[in-house]
Amino acid sequence: MIRVILPPNLRSLAHIEGEVGLELNGTLTQRSLLDAVEAKYPMLRGTMRDHVTQVRRPMVRYFACGEDLSHESPDTPLPDAIANGAEPFLIIGAIAGG
Amino acid sequence: MSNVRVLVGTRKGAFILTSDGARKRWKVSGPHFAGWEIYHLKGSPVNPDRIYASQTSAWFGQIIQRSDDGGKNWSTPGSSPEELQSSNGMPKGESNKFVYDTSPGTGKPITTHQWYDGTQHPWEFKRVWHLEPSLHDPDHVYAGVEDAAIFESKDAGKSWHELAGLRGSDTGPKWQPGAGGMCLHTILLDSKNPQRIFVAISAAGAFRTNDSGKTWKPINSGLHSEYIPDPNAEVGHCVHRIAMHPSRPNTLFMQKHWDVMRSDDAGDSWREVSGNLPSDFGFPIDVHAHEPETIYVVPIKSDSEHYPPSGRLRVYRSRTGGNEWEGLTKGLPQRNCYVNVLRDAMSVDSLEPCGVYFGTTGGQVYASMDAGDKWKPIVRDLPAVLSVEVQTLQ
Image (cartoon, rainbow over all chains, first blue to last red; front, side):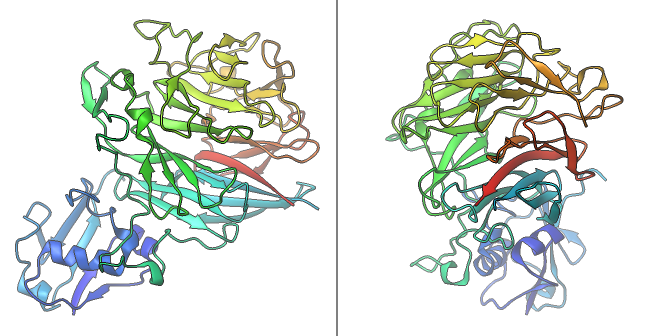
């Protein structure tokens, strides 16, 4: 089970409590993971990446296994620990103000 | 007996205030969408329990929410289980998809507008400022957006399409953002002519369509703005708000960046009616529900202060359609008050006597149940109020 943790604002928007669990076949990438999240929760389309260009929104970042993957290609395979569910894929709102 | 529902959009969520027709005791529900900026909520005049809301965030973009039970429950249109996927299996989720029309067949859409420094800048969608449900169909709703454009949905908010003739008019490259961004903040629907719509853009001016949004004409003749290179330019004026009484759609009232204006020919020409106002700068302007010549403004000190003159919060009322104004102070703070009242944060009910409501950046919503003579806060200490809409329910 692939595990995804969304920021609180998106969890409330999608009426999600806790982590999102996904079952996906094939090579896991940012793109396939986000496609699956949006397919399961269509109200999240446009909130993490642009509707048309699919480019990550400027104040959203992706982390996995302690690494910032925000600037990686969306088609780069994600770490095995994400694919096998040992670690969650984190989608977070950038820290801005406080 | 009638009831009143006040829809309040704030920097950190939406609140819904309800009362019976006496308007003495108010129940507050919320925050809805806690933590999100709610620029505007508005109910359908055909089905008042159908309410649309603009939920937005610098982080996560634009969300449209809809309630079909008067604000008790909300959903993003088109995201119910039976609507999750289109016929080809792809997820829909297009209720928050606002994409400018770039097709050549619908209004020659332009791609740039004037930036603060005078250079041209690409149009970039940021948020929905204002939602205006149709007067005839609860599934039909218009959205005024930043960067300025008008969209419409005919499927209750599930999908949105730009009325590109407005942005595609040949004046677009001269539009520029005001301090709040380049926003289309006002949409007025003509109750006597369904094809006629008025909009206002900061800082471009007012525009009118007579053909349901296919073509648009700037209607800014008579506006004079010292702060732009040509004070009498066809476009470029920072119009903060326009208002209309439904029974007299040819008469429009305008709160401009400076100057309160009036038109009696559907915007073809304007004349100043600021009269004896202590400041003719402000944001909202509204019209009494039963007296088309009674109008309200909230004078604000500017250019940069944006708080009431002398720290005294006063609504000004004219019973003569402008020029002669009286300050209304009973129940409003008359010392050390430095809040602002934003352009979409005033509304009226249609009871007798007419109720007038406005929200402040200090989080108060003030109401007068006697057309402005006396005021009291019906809620206070909310987040900064962005918008106030009132529904009179039978």
